[in-house]
Length: 128
Image (cartoon, rainbow, N blue to C red):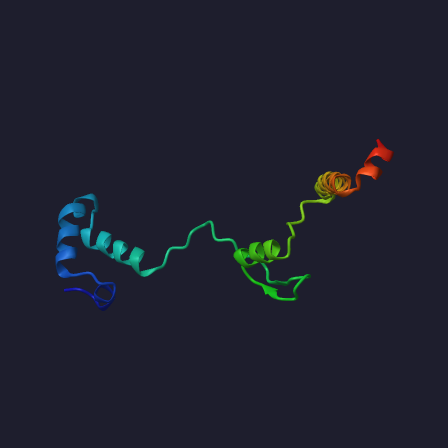
């Protein structure tokens, strides 16, 4: 006869008989083995990889951030990145500055080419 817990977990008498027939021989007391199986299903198992982070208020938007996915979304939405220490931040600032300089050089060259192409012929001859 099945207990109330076994019924609630969805086990049938056939499940129990089959399990005892197949696995019962590995236990001194097959009924005790079946009870262990039931308890494994009754108690939810948690992964060891669960990451719990403290909640904090986003310094940019003021919204509360409770989960890692909310943190990733908040950082991406506000064009931010996680703090990785002062040395890494200085490297990132140098990379950003180099990229901004390159972009500015491209823009200056584009403006100069457009100005040259739209300048009157007399101006072009005077500057050549």
